[in-house]
Amino acid sequence: MREIFVSVAAAILVAAPAMGQPTAVAAPAMGQPTAVAQAVQAGQVGERYDGYMGFVGDPSAELRRQVSAINLRRRNLYIQLAERRNVTAQLVGMATACQLLSQLTVGEAYQLSDGVWRRYSSGQKVTLPGYCR
Amino acid sequence: MTRSWTRAAQLAVGVAAAIPLTGCISVKAPDKPIDVNLNVNIKQQVVVTLQQDVQQMIQKNPQAFPPAPTRP
Image (cartoon, rainbow over all chains, first blue to last red; front, top):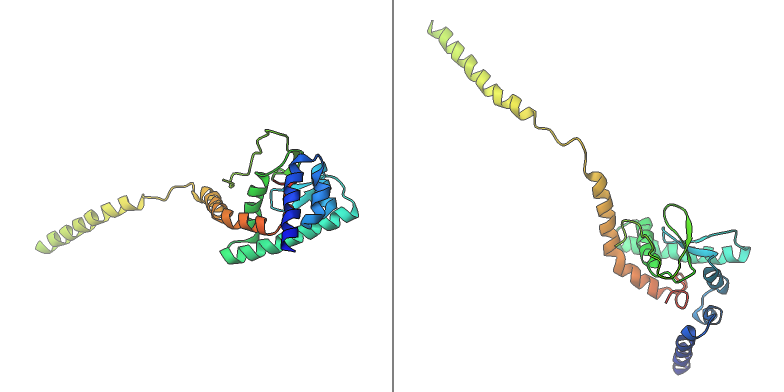
């Protein structure tokens, strides 16, 4: 059983960079909601400066539901870490955004604290908030 | 006669003692507080110290943070 899992994981790792549209194939295996993965690639959904995902346009009901689920998971994680480190959950979200915004892939949408949605293009430098390091 | 001299001397000593005090009072705290900068610094410090925790949290929770290939 374990061997099967390892070989499947290896296959995904090998296949992902080689294929043009790997997200739709890999996403269910990773337990990731497909609609979100597709929307991220299409730039309809993106990372916000506060550590949550947001919509660039008007999302479908299903997309809204899946993104809300992700944000709810994140919120719980932020609260847990905040309690462990004795800081606010808001600050944990901001610290998380610093990392997520520095790991964008080409085509992804992101929102900085000015509220403007931008698309990440290759070689572009994302101006992270001042508190990011 | 001597009494009035003593009195005058006392007065002079009192005045002399008071002069340095008025000089001290003029020392003030700076008008512009530095705590605006301090807030940013504290925020930055917290964000920096959280980085390792945050990185682990992202890696351990792929359902909350959609992983590769979206984010390799």
